[in-house]
Length: 632
Image (cartoon, rainbow, N blue to C red; front, side, top):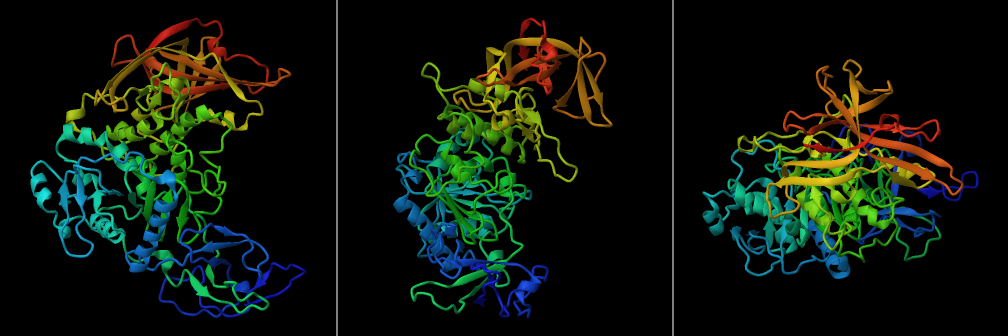
């Protein structure tokens, strides 16, 4: 390879030598040379090889012959179970422990109820279950159980005493065996695994231990996150796709006029390679329980079969260098470690060395509102995930609610009240969720099965957890794109919140029944549904027709039912010269409840926007008197 000046461009590198690298469309096979001049056959990326495992993505002008910033990368290990891979993981962990004060576990006195002692990393001693009596170092495992869990070893009331004596390593699921190997290699003596550390057939004990997962994960020394594969019966340590010689090639070009101490080791990668897509979720990121397991830990070591990724509150580093490139909002994968810094109270120093204020962080709202917005983003993300059990919908996000509650503004010295996935402090906003239409090619999340002993449970219709479908909060667009800062007017008022919690002493426990009484504008309407076009409208007594979003698109309007609209809030944007944006009014669509006499159930949501700038209020609620409405 040599540098050529083409049309005066000093930064242009023109490869002129034959390199052994597989063309993009060639089948994956043992490496063989393809004699192509690369500038005529396919594109490629050049990256500077970094010997520092904790590297920054862009190295400013380190290579003189390039004349511009050249991205850095590590050489991806071929096997994540190799000594070289374990050494890299040790370096990541050691650097964080020594330098990142923000990532230290917040409660040094916390002890999980049970842990697995992983046995000796110097000998064959088998692991065993124990109950710690003093604080100890431990890792957590975040993984997918999978669909086929027959004959999977787990702790029950029948075998718990034998597990205290010994856990035969060979009988444990392959993913747990690999997690134990990682712990031994990193010299972490203990491991927390839900299937072994929580008694699986004792519901009372299970609910109690599940309510402590907030503390279990956030106080772990490390969480091992198995992004792939999607079953605990499969190993996650092994060959890595990005370590394949056909995917990366290390070479050292001969270049003139470079200082002797300048490194010229380069990595060549396929040019068609793209950053991780947020739409292409890993198996772990498709599971409901795993969202809180991604956000609660201060440190995560991730395995996905392609490479290893380090994620903590101060940095995100991968072996191949792609996840640390500046991310494009809504297109690239979320940095859950960085998101965690916006939702935890004890992390004032957890700022990365470079600015990545995007996605969840860069907003127009003032700081007191950021946690509420972050929660709605979490609820949206969570709604795309699958669950094995129907009523896990609120259980599997309870630990995150505890974390967020610590960041929310207090009133009269008390924390904000959590109600079935929503927050009292911004209940008018939180109630405005809407079901997001699913494209024909998308696979909807699994809502899970209903246990026989939970038939009396009922998630309130006003909670997004009741629908088991992807949801969104479209009103937030106004806060992002309106020229003038939106202000809230005509907000409904909370009169009564009455929720039955599964664990009464836990304020973020799942709600298994409840009602709201809200005071606000309340108007009768007619529902018109067009099932063929999958659209619905409401029509006011004044013949005003507005499109709405139904929570169940298959709902057919029944002429015998009565329907109503309840105003949640109106947004307007004022300038100093009284110019206005909006008004934009959000409202619920209700019908009389078949569950509780005199109450109403939510069936959808709607929006009225004065697109013509005439400053007219929503015609549905003109001359309508406020009413107290109970919703169940």
